[in-house]
Structures are given as C-alpha cells and as structure tokens.
Length: 152
Image 1: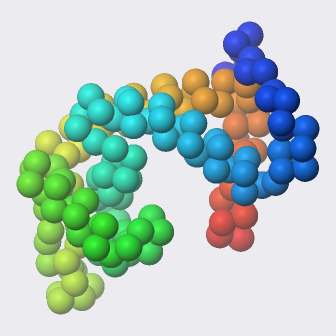
Image 2: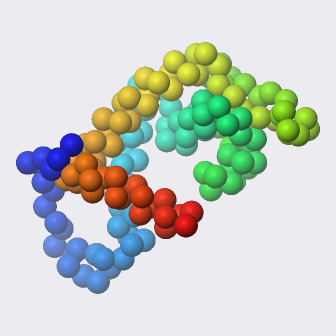
Image 3: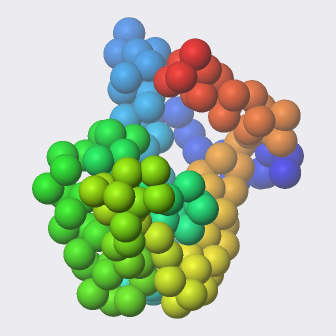
C-alpha cells in the first residue's frame, strides 16, 4: 500500500520539542490505534488486551499465564481476569503444560480460532487505515525498527 491522498494535518504544537520525543510519538500512535482497534473489536466482544491474549493462545506456542503477563507487560492478575473471561466465552482453555506439568498453558478452542480470524481481519483494516501515509517499504521498516528497539 502506498501513500493515500487522505493526509492528516500536522498539529501546530508538534513544532515544540516534545513533538519529536519518541515516547510521545509512540504513545499518540498507540492511543489513536487503540481507539480504532477497540471499535473494530467490539463487534467480537473483544478489546485490545483480550485480543492479544487470544492471539497468543492461537499461536501454537502454548504460553503460560506468566509468559502472557510478561510479554504483554500486564500484571498477572490482569491476565487471569482476561483468560477467565475468554475461557467463560469458550474461546480459550487452560491445559496442563507439556514442559512443566505444574504450569497451566493457555490454548485456543475452535471457536476461539474462528473469532480470532474474523477479528484479525478487522484489525488489519484498522492498521492499514492508521498507517496509510506510509509506503509498503516504510511500513516494513517501521516494524523492523520497533522490533529492533524492543528486542535488539
């Protein structure tokens, strides 16, 4: 996807030094993305956090609740609540870990995978909308730079 003609005007206050701060730029990008994402996810009874848990449950990586909390930078109690809700809806289940039988892993159900596929498609549209000003090459570069900044 190349740049589209629907450009957003740069706010006047972006000329201030804070307008170049990485923290502010990431926070604003996340905030606007969250609004779009949560609106699209509402059709599936999900929000960004519950969708993230469902996505990882669908990944085949069989994450534990502790791994989910660490990866998503959430308090473990928040993850328990999210998993409880998804489990109650029949989208995920807790299962005995294969590596450590004491640890519970979170895996998706068939219904969870069905809902996830539909919600994922809706979020891809949101992402295309939010990043419409970037070329395909810039989009790939943005992802690579963010991953590098996070994980080296």
